[in-house]
Amino acid sequence: MPFTIIGNQLRHFPFYPVTLLGLALVGWLDYSSGVEVTQSLLYGLICLGAGYRLNSKQATLMVLACLGVHQAASGIVLWQGPNKFQTVSEALLLVVVTVLGAILHHGEQSLERSRNRVAELHQQLRSHLEQARQIQLDLLGTAPSDLEGLDLAICYEVAVELGGDLFFVKKLPRGVFFYVGDVSGKGPKAAIAAACVRTLLEELVAEVTSPGQLLSLLQQRFVRLLPGDLFVTSFCALCQLQHNSLVYANAGHDPPLMRRAGASQLEELTGTSLPVGVDVKERFLDQQVFFGPGDRLLVYTDGLIDARLASGARLGIQVVEDKLKQFTGTSLELARQLVALAPEPRSDDVLVLAVAAL
Image (cartoon, rainbow, N blue to C red; front, side):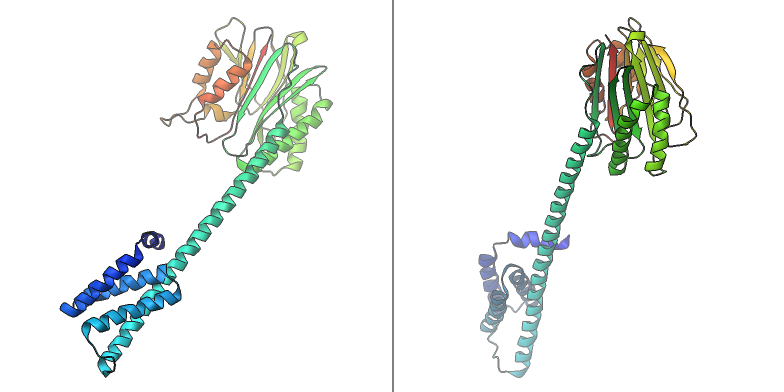
């Protein structure tokens, strides 16, 4: 820091004109009053600047110029022994001060190179993270647009470049499976785990008939593939519109909210199971509720209700419930408006899945 402060001053210092004035002032002091302290300070400043601003040849000439002015103004004869010794000592001191100026310059240049290198590495890292983020979003995909009888939309905002929230939607002959999960932790580790879970869901969904079965198979594969300190809260549902039915399993996830057609009260789809990855013996039980025309379901990750407002308070579930009770638009509009409630910068990922039966 001192190098930078002094160096910034010297960089913009009008060196040559001020140096000439400084040498003239030293000469006048030598000639008229011999104020040695003032002279020494001026010599030192001139040579410090010379070492910083000039090359070695120019700096040497500056030292000689300082001594020449001193000699000419004071009238000292160089070949007198004591004065000659004094002059040599002064020359050595001025050389040392000049070298200090050069060291200052070199140190600032090294600091600047280091700063530029750090900035370059930071930019490279951000570029790599952005590429990884795009790959993650491509792996997550989007919700199918041909879900007949359903208005389903997803809005996902990550807190950092890589997120640990994930979703999965799959249309099958027996109904529409959809899944929302939140991997513990943040950053690349959580993002890689989320990508693995998304891939496993795509593979396993064809083998099951219910959400509970899907979570059970996911658990078996999850604990074999991923580190033991990771887990994922999960909400998985199978919507069968032909039966006006929604079968779901909740594994440690924040309870989704259900708003019935024409009703003012909300229902919570709670669960008693532990998150996937906590206990390999955990059982994931299916529950079934009515889901017919006009009903709306909201699934979210905890980054929404845990978001911090400008006051420092949590957003909380009440704000989300009030929005859902009053909302009359499409699922996409609902998802976007809810995500917008979580102010930036966010400390956690925010994912909202909204689905309505038409």
